[in-house]
Amino acid sequence: TQLLEQSPQFLSIQEGENLTVYCNSSSVFSSLQWYRQEPGEGPVLLVTVVTGGEVKKLKRLTFQFGDARKDSSLHITAAQTGDTGLYLCAGAPANQAGTALIFGKGTTLSVSS
Amino acid sequence: EPEVTQTPSHQVTQMGQEVILRCVPISNHLYFYWYRQILGQKVEFLVSFYNNEISEKSEIFDDQFSVERPDGSNFTLKIRSTKLEDSAMYFCASSPAGAVRGEQYFGPGTRLTVT
Image (cartoon, rainbow over all chains, first blue to last red; front, side):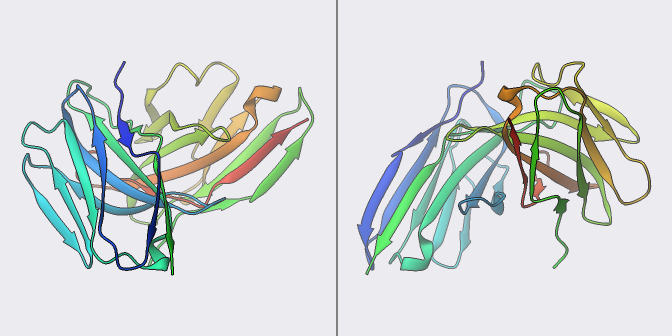
């Protein structure tokens, strides 16, 4: 069974702090996606990483794909209250032919002022 | 910016009834998906659809489930005889041709409540 483990499960920080969220697996993924999901809404795609070691930046968010394509991280610099939400990683396993995504359980981020 | 849309936003049905959940994928997308998320649990893959046929399905997607693309814009998920455990958020997603494998855009979801 392919699993994506996200840590921490919950994170509560003050505005202006930096944070890193991790997404780990023992399996190799062809690509890894990061989504943000608000309560009662669908996941919104933030980024897709494909190449081992790849780093992508989206304003204050930095995404990295592990060299072996088994893990990824999301780093937020100078968090703002608007960053509050559920962050999900999802991946397409390399050893499967289809396009089904496997999701992690998510990291709930709370940023207070 | 184009978005996946889903209707209804909330559906309440009695156990044993049939429900049809509707989705309008992004217009130039060719790959379509259904996922579900039971309250407090992970998002789970149900089925993928391409070129008017199912390309992949999970163990969850049993004979009670079916999908259809009845016209050029809609993509539907039918549950023939709903069970209490079918209560969940159902998300439709789509991908364009040439997308990176796994790059999928999700709709806002339909909350299905089976009583």
